[in-house]
Amino acid sequence: MVDEEKKTLAYYPGCELRTRARVLDSSARRSCESLGITLQELKDWTCCGGLVAQVKDNYMALLAPARVLLQAHRQGFKELVTLCAFCFNTLRRASYFLERHAEARRKVATFLEVETLPQVRVLHLLEVLCDRVGIDRLREAVRRPLKGLRVAPYYGCLLLRPAREISLDDPEEPVLMEKLLGALGCEVVDFSSRTDCCGSYHIVTNQGAASQCARAILHSAANANADVLTASCPVCQFNLDWSQSGNGDTAMPVVYFAQLLALALGEPMERLGFDARAAAALERSAAADKGEASREGG
Amino acid sequence: MSLLLSLRRKEGLAKEVAALSEQNLYACYQCGKCTAACPLAFAMDEPPHQIIRFLQLGQADRAFKSDTPWACVGCLSCAGFCPKGVDLARIMEALRTLRLRKLDTPFRYTQQDGEWLSGLPQSAVVAAMRKVTW
Image 1 (cartoon, rainbow over the protein chains, first blue to last red):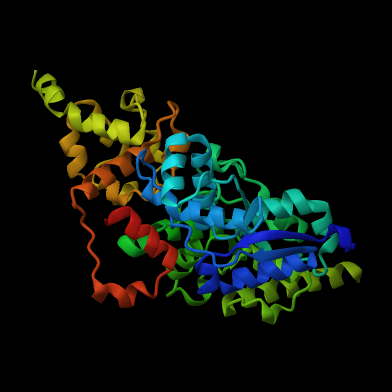
Image 2 (spheres, rainbow over the protein chains, first blue to last red; image 1 turned 90 degrees about the vertical axis):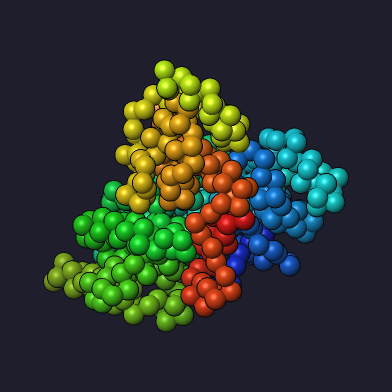
């Protein structure tokens, strides 16, 4: 990688990536390093706010995301990369809303004791990888193609909706994860539940409902004969994993897209925090692929 | 006749919902796509499209009594599929918000809940607390 291509992007990890989803953070950082991008963590970042309010006059809910955008601006960044779907959705929607509503902008600026609120573009790592790095360069950077691995790319709601405000991908026929996983050599399976809701915060308020939502998604991925399901959101990952905790060997491994990316870029598997189920599925598909290759060779 | 009377009596509540959600309640022609698309319709006592119907026909109190807005997590499947561009998730949020502002919620968490809450993703806990408690 030539030096002038080295890029530094401001990065907002959020609470999950510092606790339960550390593996998403570390695998994404390592992948980016090997692609010539440095994710520079925002200093002293605070909570994104969880979810934006969907009513007209709830300005309180805008304060947390506005504060984060202000932090990025004060540290000299015009763009901010996120990974957690909650943070991404909240920050991107808050930024969209504040750009368009003068009254909200004025009230939030007064509360945060600033003259004006800066415009900071919120990005998801998926769009950085697909649009900035580019699929061709990604494909060239792959050292260990994940051939034979059948992957169900799961988006959920927060990466895609509301379509106009988020505008990351087509809300009904998204392609970013498919493009990325395809470049890694995976066999991407089509499954009908890839944009369905995992139950979200019902894991707190109504676990039965969350579990039913999650099981429908897993069922759909299993019907498509997927070896693993990839998520980008720590809450989706938790809900999907938790809802099948009693299933033992029949359970569908749920991994982050960044784990597969780091693996394909040559990171040693044991450093990527795959759970036993996911590791077994990856080894199985690698072994099957080798068997096929030797048969073809012979 | 009774419907007309109740229209007059209840239109204040429906107006509040329309203003908060910034949605035209009367744009809905009850095709039911929102209900078909809703992943949580099974957990609701009234189907989502019925909530709009109550608001249209002066039965806002029934929309307010329903558990349906609490079952909605705002995944926006409904809004994506609505042929009339109605964002039902915002209407649900407006109903929740108006109830929360009257300190009315079926969810109450105390310090004792800390232990099991600590085993859950914190962003889900933060989101839940913001959406269903005050």
